[in-house]
Image (cartoon, rainbow, N blue to C red; front, top):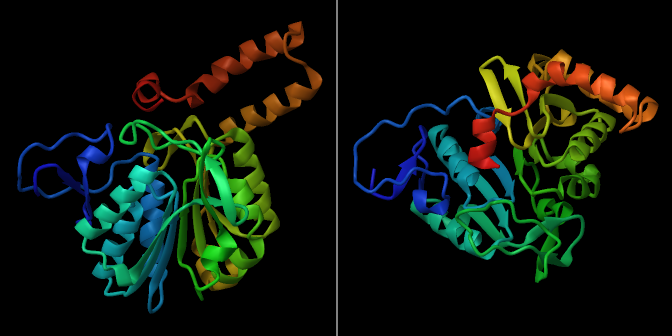
Length: 314
């Protein structure tokens, strides 16, 4: 591996200078990259690899809020290993990240004929929108809409219009998730087999959950924003929430039955439900609420992210 680059087990590579949390690699080296670690991205790996394995004659993927296109490059690498042609669409709003996206896909040998790279913010409707720019692109991937820099905006129906079938949408759009999905439910039902969403608030966790349940999609992963919980791969910290949904209209019934829903533990869900009840029956700053909080704090403490993880990632 060349100096300045890191690679994953599929062979997809990226420059370590793209993100300050990456370990610098100052020298050329020979190495066999390990399998992905057991962290919140492990669920994203599962969705990607399952989507590629379930693709028919072509793998089609959208990465929304693509950054420098890690998952787009990984999708290309996985499709190549399966002998599948692919169609990739990556959308990124931050100007420097978009330039890195172009470079990263070139570094990974992804042909321009097989991918469409769009410099825009994904929102609920087409047009223009204010965007929050950043002076430290390698130090931050949390930029969101609502700033003073005007950029192009593109909706999910517009992105999906030229496509017949999409195997996977990977979405990390820093708070715009619900608006984007709510305006595209019809075309999602018609064309999209699977969607992986990183959520960025408790309210978004709840709203997106209700929306996809109303659409009768099958949940695969449901882990809440800013928590830590036990999983079948051990305890995992979730800086952002993780939701994964499969469209039953575009999968065989047997496929849907084989999908297991992995989610926050029953105790965590119970604590969260009790807190919602308390908001109605024991208002903040009352004696009753303080007594309940003292009890719940001991139970709920095990579901808080580790201090080391908060310090490292915020």
